Length: 196
Image (cartoon, rainbow, N blue to C red; front, side, top):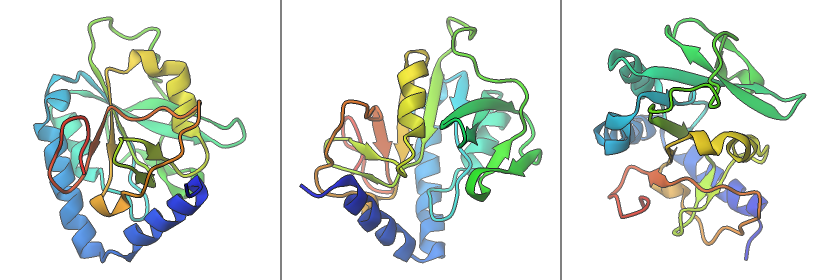
């Protein structure tokens, strides 16, 4: 079985090779699927992300979250501590360039699952480098999402990875610390459990 590093490299090479115009169309299809999903409709809080490089774009879905009067939180990465935190965003123009040039929220109101409304439904949208037919995910190698979910996953109602179909690879070797998403939404047909 190929190692994660090899699978990550392959998937990112395939993703980067797709022309930007095509990725934009695919991204819009994925964002539309997210907004139409039951998980999004029922969510009170959305933990999203700021898309970077050739990732599935999240600009539109983040705007919709605010327009739909849901609470939007975006991650801020602290590489020295090898961790990330989510902060409330009410104005997408109030962001700053952070880790690796990714647009991040200013430190303000953090999402604290221990203090959240007990009845609030929380949806997490996450990026990733690759996924397999079993719904396993490979991130970018930093382990930020796995560590975050290891600490706060119980407060999240549903975890969705957004990816292009071309990011699918052969079976991903799973480690004990790996926490898979509940769903993978791609630009192609949805199947039960995740999309391919």
